[in-house]
Length: 337
Length: 210
Image 1 (cartoon, rainbow over the protein chains, first blue to last red):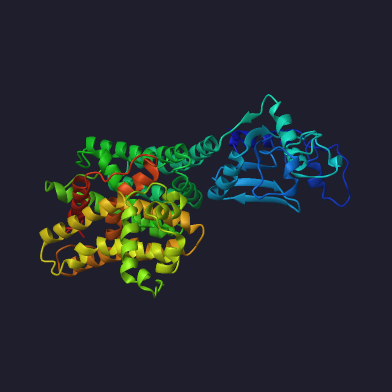
Image 2 (cartoon, rainbow over the protein chains, first blue to last red):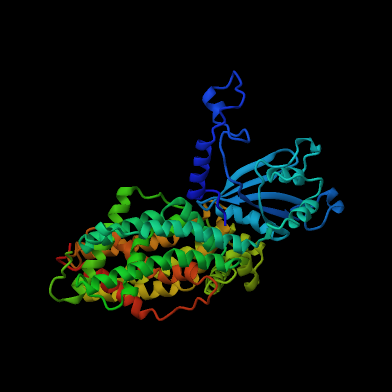
């Protein structure tokens, strides 16, 4: 698992730093004392746990004269790492620069697919590391070894690949597995947050409770990071169907399941009459989707403001409950507590 | 802009025939995530033929979206007099059945093509959306407004009511795009879900509900 941003580890790192301030270290006069004194045992201002990198060993995208001298599938190497928001950090050594950037998921998949044409390894970085700056020629293999903090004597991507593969903690990865892992994490986070109902909220009138859930769901589904994951899930459905399925299971299917349970409870409590709560849940979610979700996935139209989201949630709840009530043609529904 | 072919082989009839063939071909959405090339290939058209007839690939997709929208809104625009709730129900049921079938087949392909080809041409998605889904939603909104104006329905916000009905009719599209991406995308029986969606909206918009 990628644990770079997990709260317990951040907390542990924080406590470690506070418990061992570097007060004995020599202070440089030009640097404020508070900064100098907050350096950790490695001389770093921040103490971070070692993280896992996805190292992609790839064939060239375009033919180069020197390709004949290196292993066919490993002519280049770069490093990637997923974030908690669906984007990926890319560190790619070029001939002329080091490209360090954050990619949205759809663009990250392009690099991962490139990685899939060669080999993909999951490697934990070494902190403070054992690499050396006096290696000389800094090609992609040398710089990637440096990112990982590895002592390395190879100048070829394939040499680095063999070296890393010998480490017991290194594992091979596939693009689909990586996407499944990341989609699970990102979509679950949003679903957990959108579908959480507090005890106080459960005691609200049903119409109000449904409005809160509708608003939370709309806010979650219109979150840029989730929209980007959704876009990628749709776009990559034929190549990586497992990743798209995971998106559906942790996103819309889970929302339908939770909504269905809430509607079932409302039926049991006599607030509404509904014969098929699952179908009702799907209808309600579809009403929330309206037109804006498809527009947002297609990256056209404006992101709705909080007041627009509130209006949409309220009108969807009104149409849903009024439609159900009028359809029954019986006594008015008790939507009380 | 639509291309302006000059010779008879690329004349309006030939263009219409190509449009008809390619629109029908989208009934099978497989392969459309890779772009338009697999569709052109299976129908035996070259890029040059498309460019000659339509000017560019983008214009072809816009023309397909316009054609689909014109077909979908036929029941809405054909309703001259909105006399009572029964007529509203009949019109919406006819519209909803057409929409459900299209959202189960060719519009899945169109949306996937918008995404696949949209990476190449940033304006494409908006152009196709405006020509297709947006114009359908607009016509539905006008229909609700007319029904409200004539006192048949009580629709406080025709725009949102139209969106919410469209959202429900798009269920097969969402299923195909996200829930069963690798499964077959046959048009399921539309009658029951379409009737349920229209009942919900009409009951919610019955006179006295607003």
